[in-house]
Length: 315
Image (tube, rainbow, N blue to C red; front, side):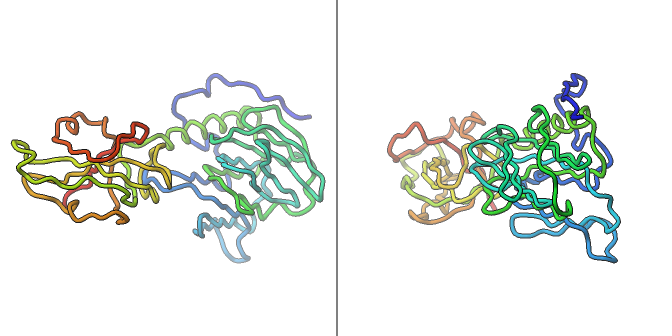
């Protein structure tokens, strides 16, 4: 009998630790205070004979996790993830879990089973339970769906395959079936921590290519001011630290940089279109002191381009 998912108001807190339910064989949280990016791939296997404990090694865009040889067979796996297009989320026991047209599907030897709708460009929580000979799946708190029987060992469990376009926010593996209450608690907890960790930071470090610049004026033009902010336009290459929803590769941003500081021209005077720069930036409207500086903007007006200020520490 499949349990019915029930709401636990006591677990709806503003801030929860994850995993909320103790006793996991392995738990992976893909983002943290150091602004590292979530993995795109995760492989969970058993360690070779003689290797004790849980081993974790980094691979390109992901992690390889080895559980101890004597680990009990997993009974519950929680996956929190985002996706941007169709692809294979996971494979285990002869079963594939994939995203297609906004829904989660299971597949086994040409047999397909639709599980539940997903949230596009948001955090999805999928919890998979091995219940006797069935696989039971909860998706974003929906009613559980019983589906295909596994036809092979449950490990290795691979997450993010075949050109997967998304991020693995969190993963937890348990050697027992979690109760309905525990499933709900873990879902609320992982979405709580994920939304907090993915919130915009005040500052971000960005690598960008200069596409248009304002010439540095002569000092006489800005008197009695001794410093001046100049508008420059960039194309974002990548974000190396921090997180801002408006900073995505390929997008245009307008950055005010000090072309004159304390009466001296800065290295901005030597910048050329096509140059790349790495800058620590923050939103123009996040600090009123920027609006009080003398500003020079020789770029074409465009109110759709977000405005930032270069706050890279001066060496």
